[in-house]
Length: 411
Image: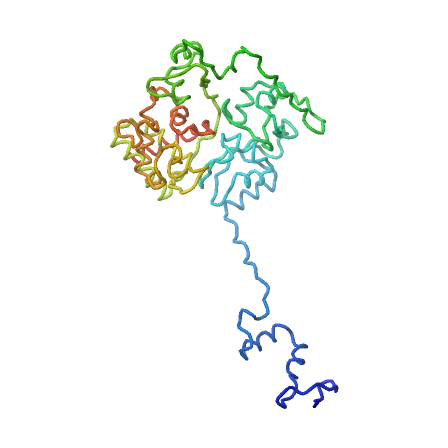
């Protein structure tokens, strides 16, 4: 076998065909990888994608806006403003973290839910907004972390506060749901009976009802001879509200053994009014809702309900997603009879279905606002909830002032 002398004075086998050894390859091993890659690409040995990977250069973050810088400066000095104006890209959790607050505190203080939307230009109130020099009333806002089995009434009993007050400070109603891991804000005068404990005391489940015991205060078990009018009178509620709360038919048919929900007034919750600058898309959809209402002869109060409902449900955007199969301006669900996916995404049809009445596109299946007896005497929250059946009915109210302003602007 023939040998050649390599660069270091050693011997290498000569390559087949009589050509010398691949001296360049051994020599290249001592050359920086980037140079080797460049040579490989030049000679056609490797494609550019096969060349040595270069480190990814991260783009520097865009400079914060003047408004954002001012907010951070205020946060750095320890001053928490009474309210802030939402900027593009803001989230409730981000705002809460910026000022050392919990997300639950900010949501509760503004009557928002975990699924609520916020918009640039919207004003959010901050709990405990004050200058850092002002002595705090408490070392921190007291909160209770929800665990499995917790109820709002049980939490109220544990801390010695009235259930209504506990619901109010958290922006909740008696129908609201709470979930493990959620932080419940306690009123300032709460008696923290679990202070210093490593974990909150366990909640004992209420004993099972004895046979013949009366149903809970917010439900009624129908017996032979009951009528909707009698039940409404005994529970001091409007017949129309009882019918709407239970989705009864026009004849208010009930049967023995049926359990009826007894609607209770929604607690008055002090929330910051929402102030939103309409984008072009939002303005187009708001105008459509107004125009459909005018064409159907809906009074101004009904159009305000529709605008507030659409603002809460979709942010006045014809979205193609939502909770479960909800879609469109009003988050109507095809599975609940509101129409096909294509139909609920048609904003004119969706608005017509929300208003209902003689032109209801789903007669006998879904009830629009005009199909609800006595809707004119209901609060905006009650009227919107009668149509939408939301899990968070108390969040419509914050849109009332803004919806009235939109109607005045759009005609």
